Length: 366
Image (cartoon, rainbow, N blue to C red; front, side, top):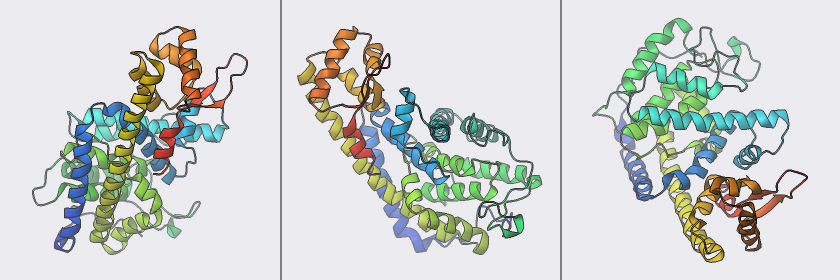
């Protein structure tokens, strides 16, 4: 199935009146979630677990099996098999790409240069690093069962010679505030069109998913690129791919838009609950740690637990610039209270590996 009618983007006559109610629900759900984001005093700390979870789930759609917990363990010095290390590297690249692109897009428009930068960052040092990071493809690719020939493909994207015109058109549409289209609907069109163009040799799915929160932030629908819908897409992976495929097969943009709107509703409501639970945990542990440790360092220790929920025992004194003995006493007290648990005991010169398990009990429900 080849790329369907290159001249029909943006699609015309979408008959959005059939999904008006769903558009309203999506905006209402997103608005409630955005209101919570705007109220956060320290979003960098409280949203950090969500960013890592999004990186895990978006990468999992592409076949990785590492978890956010394992990412933190590896950053704390744990050793894994090479394949797991490769998965972890991909997750960290995704998080870095989302962060740096969000900062760039905050003051700039989307551009082909930014897309190439995002891709280079995403593919740096991982599987696919040999597939022209930061460069649009100059060969024909196709989508289908692993190892299939082009004539067995479920979808064949446009030829390389057509990419420049298509991408220029794509970027122009993404940078235009279309008064006749709701921003969430426009985000749906942007994601689908990017996936249909498939401009890179690898990594298109992840770049396309990163573009969703970036675009909604740019349009002012959310205060930061913190709407992560990969959880919904991963749970509904077959329907996700089928809806995209139906655009090329049947020009069914409306079916894709309906799927996307439902994803926004579901994930906005899920993220709202998740962030509320994280806030409640933060406030609960702030009281507990302050009462236990009787130090003005308590809030910094708490922030470290949320930002780095798996860590080595020596990291506490290094981060807080305090004496080793005092840090060791804090850790003993927190372990005795059950606030942190020991995943690995100290071994030789390697300090114990510790985990803030209560946070995982919340985020792993995603």
